[in-house]
Image (cartoon, rainbow, N blue to C red; front, top):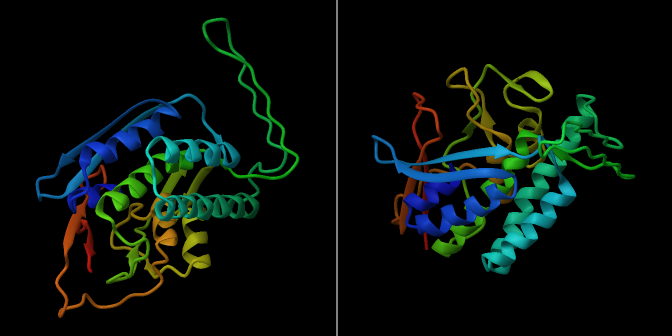
Length: 253
């Protein structure tokens, strides 16, 4: 949603989606499309046919380094992108430790027939995060850094209201848990993100969204400044049509 809002605020949609597409293709066959919603907000449709169900934190960092080089990401925005990734990695490690997920020497096997399938085995002496659903962080990082760079925007932000994480439960690779997801809850707590439950019983604040706000150091809630005019504004929605307001960002000089 953040990348879509940056596009809506004026970032070049082709450049942003091209960077996201390149990141998505590191994970598998992919497509990234930008559309406008009925209320005029931006929306990104991202489809990835993952090659694997996991991505190590070390490999994620390595892939991101190459993507930053390929798209000539400037130092300020590279640092922001790595902050995003590292916040998520830290939260995933803590979540796996808390919920007793498999996080030590990580073994994973894929054994199939001769039709292009394979068998592989990984061991790591030091614990690291294994990104399952969260491996899409690469796509979100590239969308965020390219959008911010296109707009020459700052890499810090202030909230105008606490973030709503929604409610209900989510099912993912490790089972079913209450919203917010463990990694999201960890970043809310560790990075002092103002957040609250509701207003509907579905997940509104994901680990990648929490990684964005953590990297933006969005720890304060302040009223929208009435005496300063925003230079650029953008709104976006996720892939679902939900009865909540769109995400809105405003850029000031």
